[in-house]
Length: 284
Image 1 (cartoon, rainbow, N blue to C red):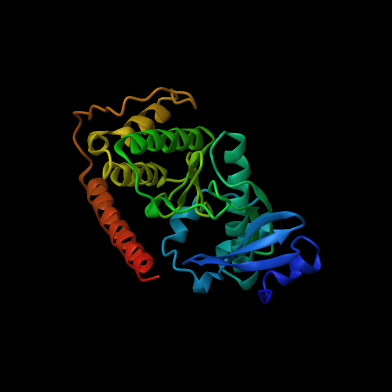
Image 2: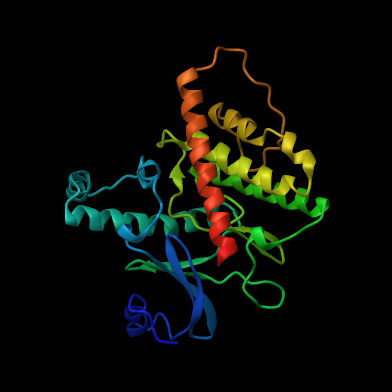
């Protein structure tokens, strides 16, 4: 196929030998299957900020540090240079998260580097060498749902122990290969300690997984892994191998009504976006 303009520099530099086909076009990026020497990989080409539909990017960027003071000031002012630097930070966030999470034992695609807004990484495949399906496209038994849910929860814990929260985890950004779930799409991953929204993002991630796997294993719908994980994290008792129960006893203290209302509004908005994604997926 014709080489996309954004990938041409990687071809010129010998990083990519051939673009085989377009794999998918999402709201944040277009992904291509490429050949790099004898290996088949994928190239994720991020869309420009004006063409992306990630409406809550500011919430995800909170806590991301820029060491260069000039760049930090430019980003705060919103100058063209600052916007360019913000884009670079957004692009690099995913490859940085992939390296960090792979080192922590989380099942993510292996990254090979990000070059001018193009992320080269492993192409996750199934037993037949075909592109692995998204979790949304997979049906399973109750037994398989319980097993795969346990893997995802384990990886969410490992992510948190590595200091990160995915922030947008759902059945649309989990692939399923021969060994189980593989977590993808991490440009919005947040610093758990530095982002004020980290707790509700983690709860939304965990509860999205509970809802999806709960279709096949209804007993999961009564679990409270999100609250249990965060409570252990806040107490400093969470470790990658912590055994969870899925149980959590709510505090008897008076609720912060304003915070609860805010969470309800945010949850409603997120659910509307999730339903829109399902609609877009069904149409495509």
